[in-house]
Image (cartoon, helix red, strand yellow):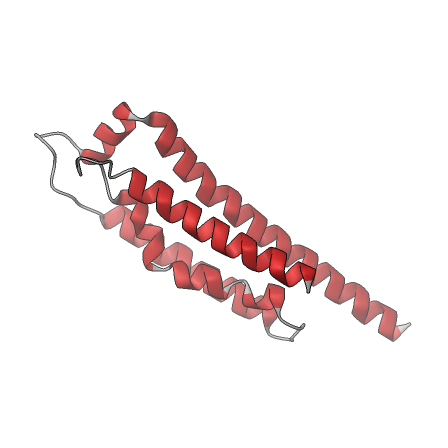
Length: 139
């Protein structure tokens, strides 16, 4: 039960943290970029990827986890590559955001990738525990 609460707490913290950081890149004047909000469009898939981690072991956990995240990554990559916004005073909003607050941009990117590493790490740990359990039952 403690593990479930810890993972759900991580999900909430990771999601809200990323949304706050992504919205922060727009900045108070609205002259920043919404570029970092693109992963939020498919964020439900990221949250769905936690199902095999918090649920009981099932035979299709790996497939569900991989397909869910691959779809999230592909759609997000497509959205990022095709993303267009109106320039602000003739300047790219993304470059303007980078020039004004580089640390905020780096924090947003880092937050996303560190969260993904934790998600994959939790999945690997769950899979190893599942295989140890199977090996013990076979012995």
